[in-house]
Length: 371
Length: 127
Image (cartoon, rainbow over all chains, first blue to last red; front, side):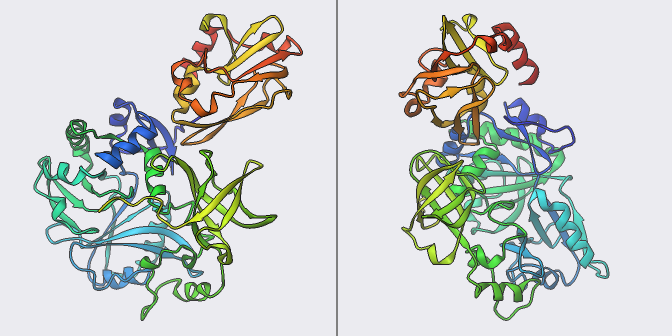
C-alpha cells in the first residue's frame, strides 16, 4: 500500500487535498493526492463532466530577453522559432544520443505578462532540465527563472471544463485554439489560461500565483460539484492519459529510449534545422529499433511496467505502462515492440508474473473523445 | 460473519476458525485502501498454503497486491463466484466476500493472529 516520505516537497494545495479526502503519496519527490474518492469515479467524472487536478508539481520555467526562440529551438525536437504569440507546442528534449531527457510544453506567452516564453517540464525532471538549460545559458543575456514554487497550476479537464472556467472570469477557453493561451482573470486573480491537458478530454490549465491557489481551487471545486465534477488525483490522471495514449516520462519516455522510437512524429521536426540529438534521431530512424505500440489484453488483469511481450517463445518487446481501462472495461498497455511485429492485429502474449496473457496490438489511442 | 469472531493478520487478511477448518478473506480496511478492485487470482483447490506466504493476488486499477495466508494447511474450497463480482468485497467482506477455506495442518499460526481490537489499533496507527 501507498507509503509516504517525510522529505517530500508539497504544493501549496497540500492541505486542500487532505481536507478533500485526498490520499497522499510520494510522486517524483512531491507529496500528491493519488485519489480522493475512487480512481474510477474520478476517471468517469473527467470523461463526462469535470475533473480538477493539481499539477503544481510540474516545473514552470520563464524566459526573458533576446534570442530565446533560437536558444530553445536548439534544445527541442520541434521548431520554436516562428511560434505565434499565445501558442504552445508539445516537444521533446533530447541529449546528443537522441535519447529523451523530458517531454515539455513550450509557451510563447501573449503580451501583457512579465515573461516572453515559458516551459512546463515534468516534476521529476525539473532540476535536471534546469541544470541542462542553465549550463547552456552561462554566457547568455537571456534571463531564466524557475517559478515552480511561486505559482500554482490547476488542470480543469472534461467536456464541461471550458464552460466552467468561462463562468469564473474573463477568459473564455472555448475561444482559444487547442494549445493556445491567454492572460486574464480567474476568480478575480491574474491567471494564464491555456487550452491544454493530459487526459484526452477538452479542458484547460490555469496558472496563478501560489498565494491565491487555494481560493481558486475551492471556487472551481464548488462550481464543478454542481455539474458532476470533482477533484481527481494522480491515479485517474494515469488511467486517463493511458486511454488517450499519451506517454509518461519514466515509462514510455526515458534516457534509454530514442525519440525516433516514440511514434511521436508530430513532435519531431528534423527538416532544415539543427538541435541537440537531431543527427542521432535521424540515424535511429533507420536502425529498426523497437517502437511504441498499444496493446489490449484479454480480461481485466493489467500488465505492468517491464512485463515481457512474447511471440511464441521469442521476446519481442516490453510493457512500459498498463492499467485497467475504465472506459473500455479491459486491460490496456503501452510498450515497445520490435518493428517487424508492430502490425495492428498481431496476436501476442504478455507475461504477467509468470502467466502468459493473450493480447493484441491495436491502433493508438485507445480512446478518443467525440469532437 | 461477526468481525469480533475473526482473527486478523497484520497484512489485512482475516480467518474464521471452526475446528480444523479456517475460512479466509480480506478486511474492510484492506478493501477501502485498495479501492477499484478489478481482478483476483484464487488459489488452487488441493494446494498448500503457509502462514505469511502469498496464496493469491488482488489487483486494483492502481496496483497488484499479494494476498498472504493467515494459516497453514490445504485449500479445500475457493469462492469461485468472487472474481467476477469483486464488488461483494465492498458490501460484505466478512461474509459473501470469503476467498478460501483451508483445512488446517497446524494451529501454530493462529497464535500470531490479532483479535479485532489489536487489528483496529494497528490500522489506526499505520493506516
